[in-house]
Length: 239
Image 1: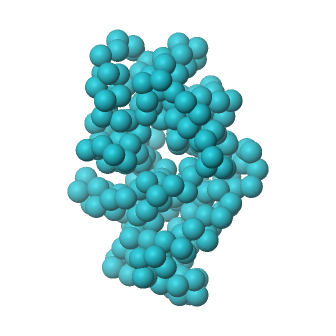
Image 2: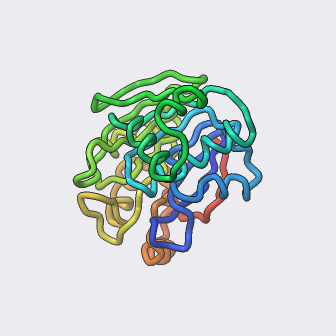
């Protein structure tokens, strides 16, 4: 499995917003600027078949319309693309199209080959395009529901979350976890350096920090922990 961290930053940083690409065909979240970053890094966006959305904040979904228009209107490929996310994700994507003055609901249904899969349970398993995807609810303050994802029991992505049972399940059942590390000290919305150090010690597994504020990034770089990685946008690895 080839993994690329397209973005590793929180929204008010000089880094791209948090976004993870797997095998060039599955992507976790699609924040502002994702399409341009994929093109800059010589990826082929049209290869993406599945979009996993952790929650519906703008810095996790803002580029979905631009991506879909690139694939269907510019490249003119008609492959089905699945968008998996919390209940209401279909309406939210249509709201974005409307806000951007793009296609309306009827035109999306007629001209864009998109399949929406809305998650309604605390835990949900989906097998799609050769991937076994497990969605697990996490805790992101008042934004409910929010999900993290485990892909093929190999890679976990927490999305934005405070430390919670869902995050621990993801780390326990993944070989590598890409985890929200926004803060110095975690709260009910985001994890912090304190939480990541605790989880790395408890599970003795590799955690890659993401959704980093610039100050958090610099402080975490000073930590000497073999299980915690702080990487740059575009970082790639195979597992």
